[in-house]
Length: 455
Ligand code: MLT
Ligand code: ZN
Image (cartoon, rainbow, N blue to C red):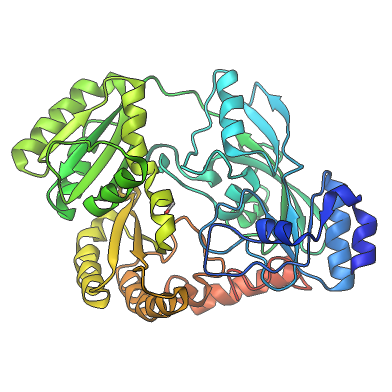
């Protein structure tokens, strides 16, 4: 493999240096040891095609690598694979003003696309804490969600065209940026969320939106889980929300300690909701707040008076994940329908407190989308292995509850390595069999991200 691979890339764009292998061979999932055999940095579609064809001819595996901000091990290379980094394919190649489409290489950083849109008076609404380093190709591979899904949807909703190289080395140009295209199977949507198991996303046509007007942020203190849903429904009756996030008091304590931030409210509450909405809806939001106070589903609240204060309130939510990282959290990323949420939470809370009496448990997430992040924190004296084994023993019980409530064991982080053994809790045997069959069609020799998603 080495000689032919070396012939494909100049020495400046292939590395076997140990620290490079560790860096590009892992993502933000700490449970796995990176062990790729090489990292390559293609610059053109033709190079990607040649690489995939070589992998087929010589039988080596490829792991696509974007910003490596994933939390399910989807970009981990632990078995001598060749990592395909898109860091050198990070240009926005064109802009169609009439269609408001940006043509992006896979390695364009999300934040760079957001800035590109802003310079043209437009808006790319998919946003999350890691948008400063995550890449469009990775967002597409995982159908990334984030903090504004309640108003703008997921990455899938903004992808108007895709250029992919299948696992067999064929180039597919899917949908060409069209709004309407009723010509059969839309392979674009098959590749979105496929976690690099069918092929490599090389280019995307991304739709941009009109920017919303000025936004206001509110943080509400809520006495219980139920109260969060009552508040959500009270606000949604009259206000178009751009975000409705939540976090527990423990999550707040962690982020405040890590970043030395002041509390949002005078008295602590068990849970907090963070809302964002158009400034033009301020009166309606204030009335909803008053009604929530009267009904007792909100104990207190704060409203941003400036963009700087809004950013400080957002930091309380967006900084949580990073503040937990030193405690090696075991991440659960669950979703259920809002109507099933109160029953699910009651059952999940009972299970978690009985299963993990000695562990700290942090709840936060995008509750307006029915998406809960449940992080179990490793106590200082525990080895990572013992901690993982313990969490893996509890996971089936939790996922059984998720399944009983019609939910998903991975709402937005993907399946990767971390959740692949649990896929059956969310997808039927028939669905998994069809996924395997599709994998064989697009990647007949199994060179694309083996072991991820389907195992
Ligand atoms: C978040 O919502 O903060 C991200 O999905 C990261 C995480 O879950 O830790
Ligand atoms: Zn999230």
